[in-house]
Length: 241
View 1 (spheres, helix red, strand yellow):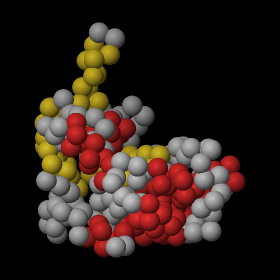
View 2 (cartoon, one colour; view 1 turned 90 degrees about the vertical axis):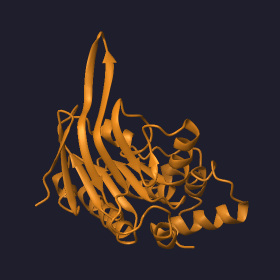
View 3 (cartoon, rainbow, N blue to C red; view 1 turned 30 degrees about the vertical axis):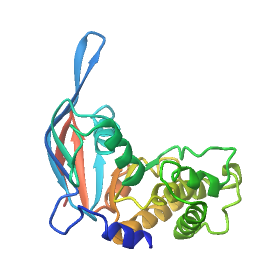
View 4 (tube, rainbow, N blue to C red; view 1 turned 180 degrees about the vertical axis):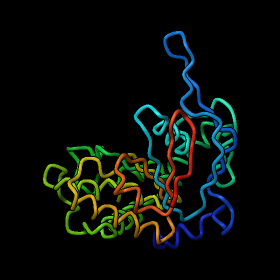
C-alpha cells in the first residue's frame, strides 16, 4: 500500500468531516507563581488534506498549539478532537498510539541520530509498530524513494547536506503513513533554494492526501499554503487571502 492509499483509507478522514476540531481550546501553565495562558479559547477546524501554516510572534503560543495538535500535551480546558478521538480525555495509551501511528513530526533541527544511517533513522519511527522486518525494510525504502533519497540510505547525517537531512527527517515522519504531518520551522535552517525544494516536497505530500500543518516565521513559506493562520496572544486569526 502506498502512502497516498494508506492516507485515503484511514478511518475518520471522510470528505466534509474535520480532521481536527477545536472548541474553546485553552492551555495555561503555572510559572513562577503566576498563571500563563499560552492558548486562549481557540475555535478551529482543519479539514483532511489542507495545507495550513501558523505564523505569529515569538511567545504567541504557536509551539503550544502544535504540541496540542500533536497529542504531546493536553488542553487545560475546551475540546480538541482528532478524527474520532477526543484528545483532552484520551488515555495515555491512546495518545501514544495516535502519535505512533497517525501523526508525523518534522523539526527545524532535523533531530537525526548522528551515529545511524539515513535508513536506520527512518526505521526508528517504526519501532512502536508491530511490523515484521521485511515490511519495515520495504516501508523505509519506499519512504526514502518518496523524498528522492533512495540512493542515500547508507549515508550518515554528516555525509548529507542540510536539505538532504531534512528529507530524511520527512521520510522518517511519513514512513508510518500518518494522516497529518506537523512541522515546526522545517525550512528554518535551509538556504532559499533548499527551502523551495522542501516546500515543493511538502506540497506534493499534501496533494497525495496528507494534511500539512506548518509553524513558520517565513512569509514565503506561508504564501505556499492553502490556508494561513496567525496566532498572537494565544488567539487564532485566519488571514488567508
